[in-house]
Length: 369
Image (cartoon, rainbow, N blue to C red; front, side):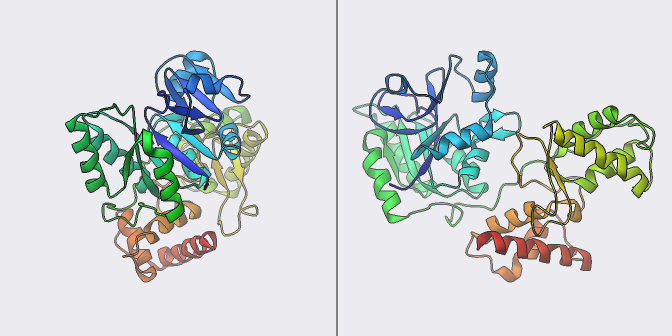
C-alpha cells in the first residue's frame, strides 16, 4: 500500500487502529488504519504521548507538560505506513508548525477525515481549501463517527461534499477498501481540481520593534536577543533583511560592512546555541543569501509579500510558489513570472525582478527534477 497521510477529525473514534499515536482527549494524532479501538491498540507502543486534554495538539501538549518536536514526529512518521494527524490542517503542533506543515514535510498523498455531522460539507470544503492551497493533493475523504443507520441529512451532506469538493467520500466503515482503490488508481484531487482557486498565501507578520542599540557598540547578548525577536516574527528570512531591520531600528541609514559584522556574528552564535537554524548559501545551491529561521518553523513558508521587496523573499519560497502555480495545468510556464507578481500584488516586471525570478524558476525546475 502507498504510504499515506491522514488529516482530519474524529480519528480517535472506535474502529480506528493506530501504529504510533499522540492522543489529545479522545482524539488521535499519528498512524491510523481501520481496525481495533484506538486506546487498546496504542497500548505498549514506544512512541506514544497521551494528552488528556481534548484540545488542539499544542494546547493539549502544554497542559500535559509535553513539547512536540517536529523532527521527532517526522521520524515517527517514517516508520508508519499510514500516518494520521488529528485536529485539522491548520491545527498547531508548535506555535509555528501546523499539521499541514508536517504533511507537506512528509510529501505523501493525503486522505482527509471529517467527523460525520450536519455541517460536514462546510468543514470538508474548508479543509480541502487549506490543503490544496498549500499544494497538497487529496485522494478522498473518509467520514468518522458515521452512525448505522445514517440519517437522511448525513447522506445528503456526503453527496454534497463529493459534488462540491470534487473528491470521493466514504464512511469510515468502507474506508480501508476505498483508500486502497484510490491509491491504486493514483487519483489526486488536488490543485488540478476545478474547485481550486489558487495557492493560499499565509499572512506575513513584519517585525515592528524599535530602539535597538548601535550594532558597533552594543554587547553581543543584547544583539542576539533582538535578532531572535526579528526571526521569531519574520522567519524564514534572508539574513540581509534581518540585518537591515536591526540596523534601521538602531537608527542606521545604510547597512555597512562594519555594522553587518556584529549582526552576522550574533546570528552565528544563535545558531551555535540551537536557537535558530542558519542555512548558508553554500549549503543550499541556488540560494542568494543565508536563510534564518527558528527550529520549529518550516523551512519554506509561502506568504504574502508584506513589507518585503521581491528580492527580500527567499528564493526557495518563490520557487515553492511557482511549483504550486505550475500544478494548475492551465498555467503555461511562460506566464509563471506574471503569476508570481500577481500573487504578491505587484504589477511591474523590472529588470531586477526579472533576473531574480529567473533564478527562482530555475530553482523550482531543479526541485521538480
